[in-house]
Length: 197
Image: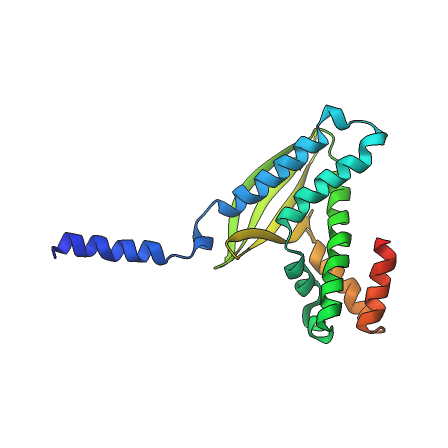
């Protein structure tokens, strides 16, 4: 085997062994595509008016559910308390927290009134995690929204959203810790059931 061919073979092996998450741009493309879909729904002239609010929210929710990793979000929000929940409680918490967090995100995004959304760079946080910068540009200011994403099972999913410097997961983690300092996991689930009713 020639030296050149051997060198090429080594380079090929190295390239193929690089984990998919390292490839730049994939996370940005994943979130940008979904956000643009949301903006299309919000800007759809056929869905204008209060009577179409429910339809619009359902369409947005379906898109949000595609890109959010609610299981990962739940584990991070509960932190070490996650292990004190039974598998059944973990499943219910993930469902309820997904509804709560998705609603909080949608409250922000549904306020969109034809402002522009600009995407910036990816900031690698670890081998399989990255942060994608974006901002909503209004006539008077820019609102930074950063998406923290994780690569699992061949897909990039959102595990936290940082809006104007405030992490949604950290915000809820603080709330949940306060509740769990006084309540059992069932007590927290009862609170979430009431909030999402």
